[in-house]
Each structure stands twice: as structure tokens, then as C-alpha cells.
Image (cartoon, rainbow, N blue to C red; front, side, top):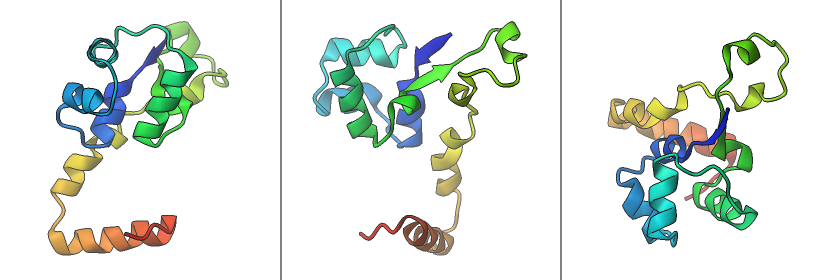
Length: 118
């Protein structure tokens, strides 16, 4: 089954108050509540675009595939790239446990790898 998984992106981006964040970012209270509770089954492309801009992601990052047991057994299923591992979600917690001097090293590596200057 395909679902929108905004909570995954909120965790990855370190958002602690999802509802307030979504509303402050210009989304309606109704939309924000529905998407956070995974009650959204369809979405206009303009909303997909707004979410992608907010989270700096692609539409594929907004969607998650939870295969049935039969689908999971298919090695080369076309939706396999949308099956999510939970690895990235704990990144914020992991970074919070790293000593400050090591964070500077990690920051330098990220800037070097992605050529981002701040």
C-alpha cells in the first residue's frame, strides 16, 4: 500500500512540533492535522510541490510503500525503492549524542561533500 509519510520527514528534519510547524509554514490546520495523522489518501500536485519545497525533497520522499507479504517476495518489484528503512529517522538523536568537537568535523565533511557554505 502506498501512503504519504510526512512524519518520517518531520523526524529527519528534527521538527519537534509538527502541527505548529506545518501551520506556520502556510498549510491549513485541517490539512496539517490530516497529513500528520496519515489520513491523506490523495493530494493535488501543487500541495506535493509545496511539501517538497518545505522539506527540500522529491515527491518520492513523500511517499512510502508498505508491501503485502506477496509483494515483498518479488525481488524486482517496481515500488521497491519506496520501501523505507527506518535508519535516517534516528540521525538527529545520533548527532545529539556526538561530542561537540566531533560535530565540527562532521559539519566540515558534509560541507565538503555537498559543497554547502554557511
